[in-house]
Image (tube, rainbow, N blue to C red; front, side, top):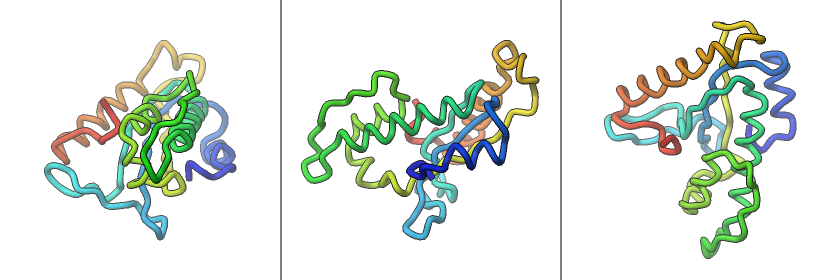
Length: 156
């Protein structure tokens, strides 16, 4: 869960320290099951909002968490008025939530989770040069678009 303080410990215990890979931001329902979301061609049973990749998943997911949590704090839920957005190192997803404030209402911060997949294709010291995690991300995005007729809503 993105809002859980122990999120990074959970990722580290499952996957080890910093590692290359892909991550997905999901919406959950009130029972903490994946929220089924209507897409252009069919329904996404996993509620995928964003797909990303990084050489250091722990660092990138921390940027995502900071950005998204800052975005939720910057929107007045009653008036949708924007308050000052101060995270200059923001992940693009937080910026999109700020620009479309109804996203914060539709997908509460407490109902967002991240799944990660380690890229086993490269040794840790070769990650920056190898960049196969970006190829995996591209493959996931293409597969998603082929299945649902569009990319996840928070991807460009």
